[in-house]
Image 1 (spheres, rainbow, N blue to C red):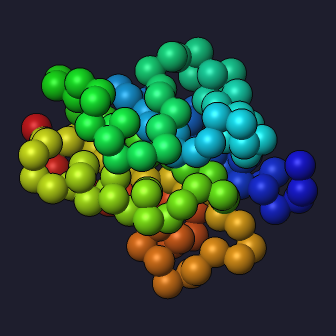
Image 2 (image 1 turned 120 degrees about the vertical axis):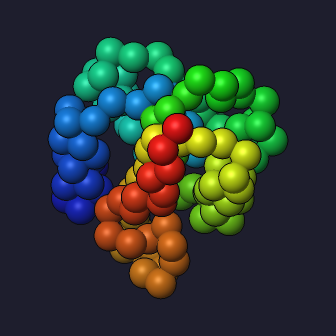
Length: 130
């Protein structure tokens, strides 16, 4: 692992130690080393299996999110920002009442820093009360 992604993985791990989520969407290819590193960090840090690897918005729509208050959308460097943005738009469309929705994007050095999903390491997207 290169130095910069390793730092971001540590920040993610620290975040998980201080926060819990009812459900986690990991946006990425199941064969991607980055996706698998994030998945491994999640399992080892939280000991939870409330996570789904998704590559499309349609996969997210199939998940029953009733009674879910805290959601994390996690994506790695190679995840398509348009897919992450479509998931963000769906989850913030007003159809859900989240207590917390967090977008956590592990950035590559080439990331567009003007993107809503590229603000530093993570962006708190909304904080609607249930």
